[in-house]
Length: 404
Image 1 (cartoon, rainbow, N blue to C red):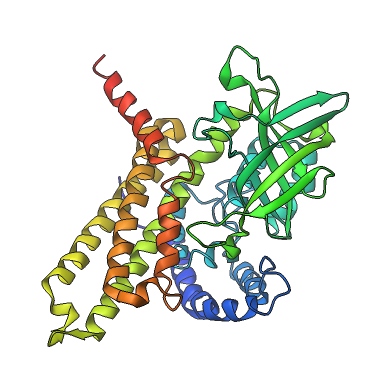
Image 2: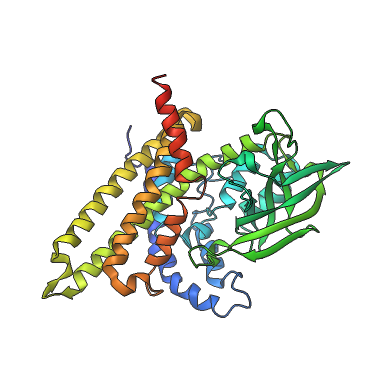
């Protein structure tokens, strides 16, 4: 396994790092100032649109899509170090590059399973960054970590499907630019195969019967840059049967195909978040004095920094190995490694950011530093795309199977 950057990756890394230093990081404070003046906190600050235009001008656009017909045509191994860089500013950079969830997963679904009509109407404007989207799967009344529990109904009625159900933590749904939902529900709730009961259907936001009920908070944050996480109720929302993605009963398989790349993208960005936390930790340590000597000379602080560096290097190697396997043997062949990084990366990065918070004292939990929001985002990813315990259960069963 050769993890040296090839020429294209190195060129893109150089361009992206300059873009981050020259445009993204300076825009963080500007975006906060502009958001305070917006009519709605869910509107997009002007500086974000400026970043998107500049990223597109520099060729830093749709880097996540391996299909050259739609995106940059990068392999997972090529994209990994780029996603890591964007993780240093997770609220702005992924959006600026049109590489932000949940749009990335939704675009991947449409490229793989969408009809020509669906691609024309929804994929093309998503690729152009003209609209945003949401993925409606999680429900408040059931343990949604088991997708077979989903209760939302998608019922055929003539030439239409009628959707009835309640979803929550639907990322991006509060953003007024969110024009389309991919909704997962059951078309055959009594089917013998529990993994063939579900389907996915496209539901435009302005469909009668779609109610955006409220924004859900995440550790007290509303996550405006992500487009919020909404509770959405479908009151018999009716859409044409042609809005079905793939075939009836294919929803579970589509969800698995969607989540594979999404999980590794999150882990790539998490490493960037950890790198920023280490940088902030080091800058704080050399700039403050306590009990007669610089904090950087305190033994416990040196231990935190050393342990954090070791942990990040370990994680990066595991993520790169996973990306390489996805490229060479496919997502199924990389199943164990995808689960391993999903377990290890958020948990470890939470610990690193927590050390940085501790080192900053009161500043660490304040709005004057990004650490509190980074911690909340990293901790949330121990739940998103399947909680740790689901992946641990599956990975352990695969491991035990060798001995049965």
